[in-house]
Image 1 (spheres, rainbow, N blue to C red):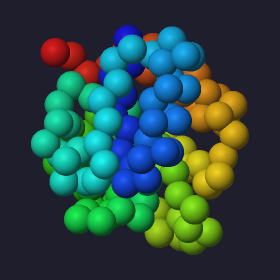
Image 2: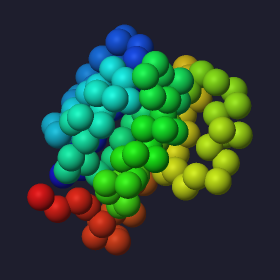
Image 3: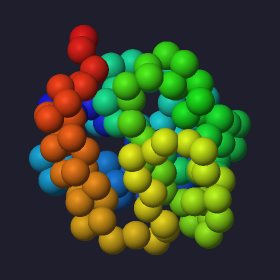
Length: 126
């Protein structure tokens, strides 16, 4: 079972992604409306799906703090910022979704993530 944290300050996006993941069969999902709140509930997480531009802490700042606590966690960034790939240069992220994105693109990344994690047996253990 993949444990997912979705982080986005845009409530409709947050709800849409959560609902889509639930319909796709994921059940271990946490949500947060900003990076600070995400850090408060960041434990036993395999994958973070996160917006880049957020108040309090942006996505990169949040990711850096999360990686200090869990180096095995993977990240998929979602952003409407056309420079997102430039912002993430030098960071190893699992995927980038440019908003607006098709849910099929997210599901494709999730399937790839699951296959790699099963192959490498790198799930977070509780």
